Every structure is written in structure tokens, then in C-alpha cells.
Length: 70
Image (cartoon, rainbow, N blue to C red; front, side, top):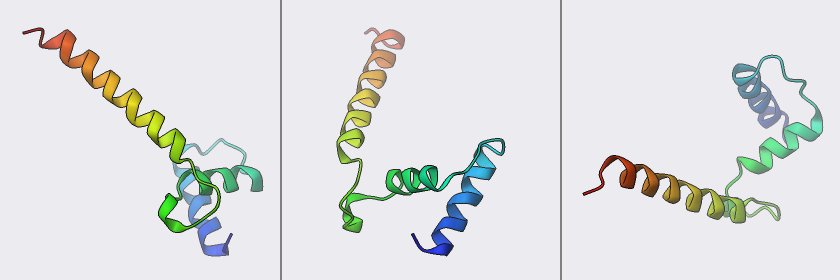
């Protein structure tokens, strides 16, 4: 991973959770999670993105059904 990308990820993680221990492995996982499939990398989380979208649709449906029954 390029040094500037590493520094940006470290800065982001320090802002979100300043007490977390930043290892090289964690930075690689965060980099993978934040990389879209269109970037052409072999590893991506497209299947998890699909699952997350389904969970959001379910939560929205439950909310609407509960708050607006008619």
C-alpha cells in the first residue's frame, strides 16, 4: 500500500477510535473494506455490500411498516 494511503487510513482510524492499536494487518483490512470493486483489485467485499443493502432494505421496511401501518 502506498505510504500516503497508509497515512490517510491511520489518520481516519485515529479520528474514529483514538484508543485502537493500529497494526499493518488492520490497515490492510480497512483498505480492502474501503476499496470499491471498480478499482480492479482482486479482493473486495462486493458480497458483503450486497448483504448490507439487503439488511438496510429490511430495516427500512420494518420501520415503515411499524410507523405507517396504513
